[in-house]
Image (tube, rainbow over all chains, first blue to last red; front, side):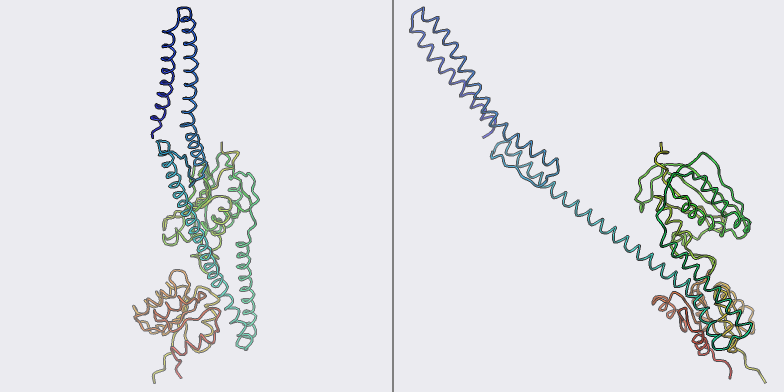
Length: 372
Length: 131
């Protein structure tokens, strides 16, 4: 039965009781004397009032019990759903509108629980896929490292082995043998350098960050690579401007920027210009980067060298990837720079045009206290 | 009487020391040797021999696989039609490189570090010296 019908019956019953009592009393009054009539009239009025109040109160209590109790349970249920307790059901034991509402709420709670489970499952699957991707990425890097080590060490080892054999078998003698020994010595130095660089690549200490002015780092880097630039006939121009403060390890950042600058100078064997510029801007990190969007410092290192072929562009940060001749570069410089910048919460982009030059841009988050 | 021609080996290798020891070993055996510092120089040399019909084109090629400009595999692919034996040397001695080299027609592939006598033996097998 509907709630409205139940309430109507309760009220109608109350009114009937009042009217019935009132009619009986009035009949009694008609038969009484005049004196008594006044007294009885008052009594009747008071009695009717008392009965009306009692019946009214009882009706209100009954209504409250009938409607309030299940509503409170529904409210409590809604609160629990809101707090994330999904999949629970509520029983109101009624078959009226409140009962229907409870059934609907139970269904909604059930559907929300299903949707939530689906979201959790999908998120877990996505995380697993990401972890798998990172793992394959690491494997690929290890493979590249192994291939690079094999190539870099294979050739000098071969040179050493052949010269040693030639000396042992007496094919190389006298002055030739001493030349061969000199070559063996050079080749072992070359291998030692490669191993040292490799260890530097693998065992990089975590950065000791402190707020530093990028302009100072840029000035240090330019003075560091100046002798190299002079030999190659490269002019260096470093922009000056307002201070740009970042949280960074100055030594590591200097190494990263120097590696990029050296690569630029190496690309200009016939001379050219190396431009180091700095700016501040709002940046959204690339998709494979965890950092938030925010104000960043950008250091541009642009050369007017030979440029990088489009096919090689995405490989420049791979360890041991090099287009230089054997012995000129191990192919670790840019990947070391990339690693350092990543550890500082930044990233590097590269744009290049064959025959025109290359521009590397290093992005680093601005130091928090300076952001405002 | 017509003298027997001394076979010529073209050695393409970007590492100077490596190139020098391979060339020296082959010269000691009695081969004439032309040295190329990368793949592009090697292919240029072969092209120029064909174009000018020079009297001493290479009879065998020994090439490193990883070289700037043109790799040893590209050199191999470029001379495929010429029926020139090509011996490759590589530090990337993985199965894929070996299979690719064989499919392109390489005589053999040596993994660095290799025994120089084995390389010389392979050259002698591909193009014997006149007795």
